Image (cartoon, rainbow, N blue to C red; front, side, top):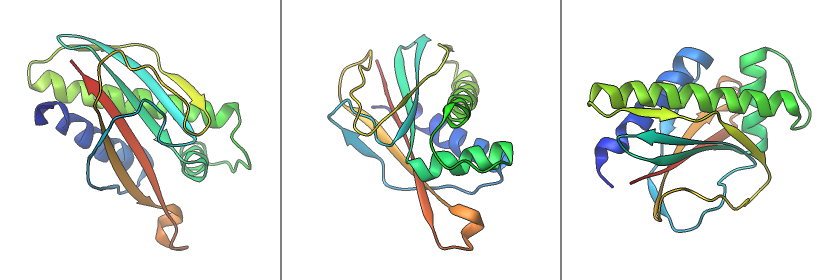
Length: 160
């Protein structure tokens, strides 16, 4: 896959986490996925269409999803509930929107569907494109690193 389709998601994740959540994320090594399963416990998925067609999935492990909810809303949550699901859907929408702005700068027009959020580990997804899928892991510290805990989000996407 051409790097011009990867960089907008890298920029989007870094910008959204820093400006919206005050969180610095560090990207790990991109990987190719040859399976169509979710990378985390709570995953926002949206289709993209226009000059290209594709799918983007943004996955959080349970602790990361609850932390994102707490950071966005300012409230604690013990379990994955509808509020956490809504927060993951909103972050998916915002990251996708920021990535689409980056694509526009390159002259690539993309429109997005409304995100769908699924809860569960290793849930099978049907990407509208063919394998492989690019998976970008982004790591961030929970509670500003005071507890030493790290979390990861995965941005998985494919275009054709």
